[in-house]
Length: 415
Ligand SMILES: [Zn+2]
Ligand SMILES: [Zn+2]
Image (cartoon, rainbow, N blue to C red; front, side, top):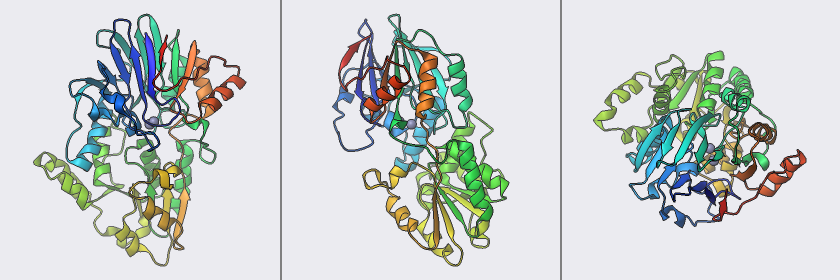
């Protein structure tokens, strides 16, 4: 077997790995969109490939999937596909284009009569992320995907390192946190505790800025709301996401739960006018937040990507509004800015806003990466999904791990 990393040996984002079996069959793992504009070259997406395997529904791992030739089979988790489709429905009114086959956690399957895949559920900032054991030509490759050990699924991390797959020839392991730090909040539990303290004292409304698909974070905020008797207001898109996640795990809050209210975002409702959404729209209507927030703003917490400007304007006044920024702070910088960055940066410096950043990363800390690598004990480790592979290598060598190889993008290596 041969392996090549199209993108990701020196960057976070745009991840795409190629495995070529001795019989000529080609498998790609992830087909991510780049996160920045430094290297726009993604011409390789038109190269010959027999199948694509997607680790999780973050755009830096699946974002170029629609650029594939339509017939290429794409293997993806059920919930991951539902979550990507949710994004498509609420942005483009359509489903993701492609030929998809779904798989289940820990259930082994074969791709192109050649590659044996075992998907391991991992702990990450999306509810369904996988690492893969890929076997072919008597070689065993382990692809970590994005993972951490500090979220609400820390159990699956422990399960994997307590009972690791053996005889790994190559471990492709993410190294996001080699350059980032996670000092203040180490775990999801510490995030819950921090937002709880703010909700307890709030005299006006609080906004928590996060991704609707970060279900661990949603649960942290929900639990803090429950402990402080606050209503948690979500938008229509988030309500849809909860429905998708509940198809797999019914412990996740439902939109009908007493603590949940739904803000009827007109733009989002517009995307689901089709009669197939009738039942969902009716359920949303029953839970609508309406104007109740204006009577007792301090009873409400909004979990949104962007604080609604009209709402903020109406509620500004005597008491401070809390804005809790609960995602990677890089999104507030010019080079990673999105549609809401300017709005939040303006509110951040306003006198009548209390702005706080309360977040923990979706990625493993360097000590957790080392625990993981030591448990798997592979013949060779190649860092991926990192901006600082050299630092990765140095840190690991300090710990006595001398099996780190640094690869270059686009080069084929024999296993
Ligand atoms: Zn990710
Ligand atoms: Zn990623």
